[in-house]
Each structure stands twice: as structure tokens, then as C-alpha cells.
Amino acid sequence: QVQLVEFGGRLVEAGGSLRLSCAASGLTFSNYVMGWFRQAPGKEREFVAEINWSGDSTRYAESVKGRFTISRDFANNTVCLQMNSLKPEDTAVYYCAAKRLGLYRYHLWGQGTQVTVSS
Image 1 (cartoon, rainbow, N blue to C red):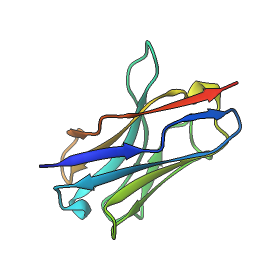
Image 2 (cartoon, rainbow, N blue to C red):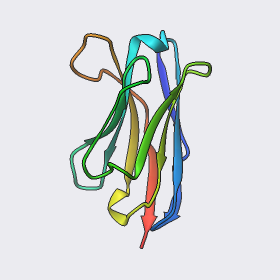
Image 3 (cartoon, rainbow, N blue to C red):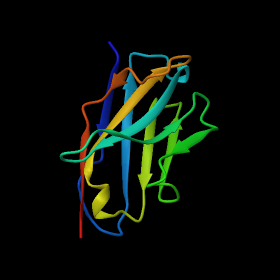
């Protein structure tokens, strides 16, 4: 059974940092592109960042470029999102996602973790 479990969401002040982690199980980790998405209240879910199967290529939404860093740890089957210089507009539920190599859409999702940035 494939599982993606996120950790690390909490309340943080604007300008602060936070590190989210996602533990993946039940899959061959290196066969999947891993990503982070977020959904703010009243808004649609949006792409935040992704990292390729080997970990040597990343892509970011313009709104987080230069502030967020995605990484993956093959020893522990985890993907992390380091978030710096947080802004109130970063407040959202953050979801870890996975898509098997060759697929266009993400098809595996975690349950989400709440990040709240106070002004």
C-alpha cells in the first residue's frame, strides 16, 4: 500500500523558516517524481515545487522561487521542502505528491499538513 505522510506544518511568524517532510512508503522511490502542492482557503490547489527521480533537477512556482528548496533523501525515502522568508500568503495546507516516471499527472497524494504564517 502506497503512503505519503507529511510532517512539519505549524504556525510560524512572517519572515521565519519551516521545513516540511514527506515520508514515502510502498513504492520504489527512485521511480517517482516528487512534488509539493498547496491549497489556501477558498483557492484551488497550486503547484509549489517538484524534484525529478534522480534529485538533480528541480522546478518551482514563481511565487516561491528563491525562498523554497525541495530535496529528496533516497536512504530514507523522504522528500523535504525547506521554506524560508515565509509570508502570510504562504499560509495553506501543503500536500506531498508523487507521479510515476512517464506519467503526466500526479496520482499519489498525502493527507496534507497545515502551514500558517502570521503577520
